Image 1 (spheres, rainbow, N blue to C red):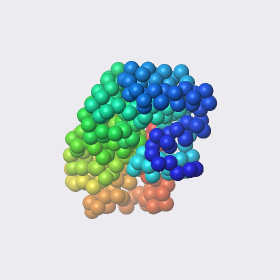
Image 2 (image 1 turned 45 degrees about the horizontal axis):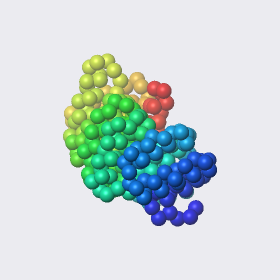
Image 3 (image 1 turned 135 degrees about the vertical axis):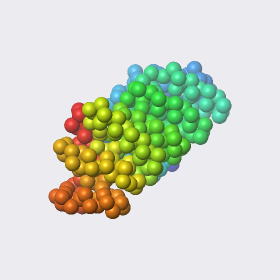
Image 4 (image 1 turned 90 degrees about the horizontal axis):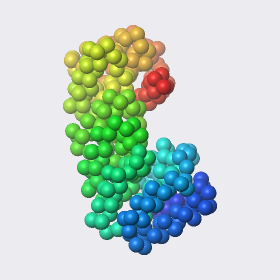
Length: 295
């Protein structure tokens, strides 16, 4: 693959390999219009009409393409994108209005776009200009209950890790747990673990238990660096659960912790510890198994 010099070139390269020539010709004409005239009306129209020319087929990136993406922008991951989303992001990156006009137009599109238009916009946050100015928009977007839109912000997206203040980060992670999203796909999850989030996770688990409802096993990843006597009592409940995934999560949390009393719990779980050490049990594996179980 020829080395690309900017994200828009990379996206166009992806589209050229996956879309029909007539669709690409249409896209080229729209980009020419929005670059030359910077007309919000023409930009909005092209962004909306892209669904007539591009399908929602998954990109199915090759390993080389995944590596190319992350080399262009740290953490950029289009492995869950579709072709239509890519075309819309290409349009967005080529909209050449001045800063104030760009922000006004794009914010208007965030507010008026349909489900899939918002998905494309939020997933594009790490690629766009004026990222600091879009922070409040990204935080506001996390309030949605539309899974497709929420996932575009929270999952496979480096923007929250890089930009969200701790309180907003914690809220996003907790909502991911509440919505039972695969939190192993949250970038920076381990680096941004914090004491407040560990306590929030514990409180959430107690609420679920009190209501007779299960707790997603990935939650215990958040408490690993902060285990104390109080959190250890939670972990004991998980480790001695009758649910195998919960047991694996509890043992993995204790195994990764530096809290000595947690290590004492591991003596009866040598088989699981061996599986951890051989890489057969990981947070990603637990997360994937949980999602498959509830599918």
